[in-house]
Length: 453
Image (cartoon, rainbow, N blue to C red; front, side):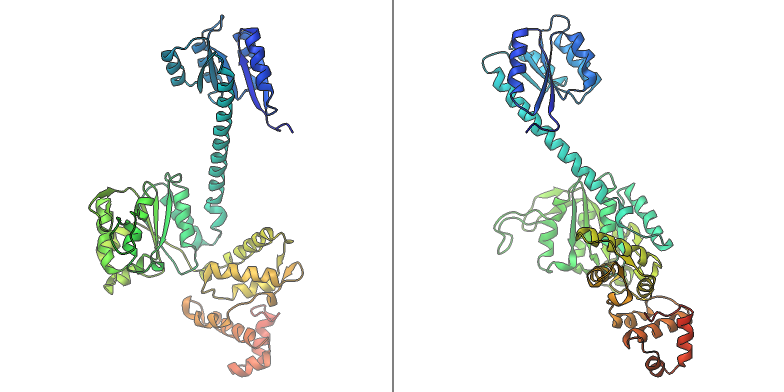
């Protein structure tokens, strides 16, 4: 079957027999669409058709081959030009290739095969180029942070503002926030929207690497540096050269290694474990932690000089419970995403279900919300997610009661809601457990302050 997008080839050749032979030979490939021209004037008048490849006879009678090449590149630099010449002149060939020709083929017995192979090579290069462009486009879409860092609350708008500032420079960035708030997403958003976007992004979870291996992981090691080091291995700093190194949970880094990290950041060079060679490195550093590093400094668990080296531009991600209606916005996003990924019909989030989510503290933050919503989609039989489809860890609601500043009335409502959830909306039992009047609870329900559905 013929390719839906054939490779368009123009042949410019004043020798009628040779041009016809080339046209016939190339047309044997059903993926090629071939046109032939006998003079430069007709050829140039048809360049608006944008051929992808031109085979150019260097010795055209009405215009020099170099001049034709120049005009082609002026009209469309993307057109690939293969020169076909009756004479083997190395200097001319080099000059033409320097000026943009893709290949130089001498008219001999092997010319047809060389042209065929050159076109195959061109198609391969063009395919790779398109694939790279597609991947770049996908990366751009994937890391458009306005699409995957979702929220409209004032607290989260500050995060967007700081990300934009971070993208414009190579300043060190320190991201803080509770577990599950999206610290690595922020780091990736900064990298892929900065001038380093085409360079490596290397993420290291410091807390996940055994203490005895972290030095080798970060700085690499030489063969024989320790038992099991059978080959040289480069570390994460070298992997991230010219790109971004994201050090997650930096607060867990052993105090002894903090001094070595500080030296690396100051000197911008590393020495592999067991080696003497000094390796220059150029990386942007983004760190993240759920700890308060200043408190760690005061407790002498984190070096003060390293703290000031890493603090850079601080970005504090607010916990989900402080982002108000972002909970609902995110819930709807995760719901639509999960339905699309699993080829299921879209579902609605009932107002009662929304209220149930808004009354939860979400100690696991965005990560917990996503899990809750995905389970709710699975549990819902119809097209609407109801409160009973939402499974929450009620104990965590009480444990995290004090994590957010609230009015006394808000605390009261959260406590009563927790007991209503715990005792299956039994108002009389809840009133007895909390030693308050049942009419008080009924009044709050009627006012829409409590959810019993």
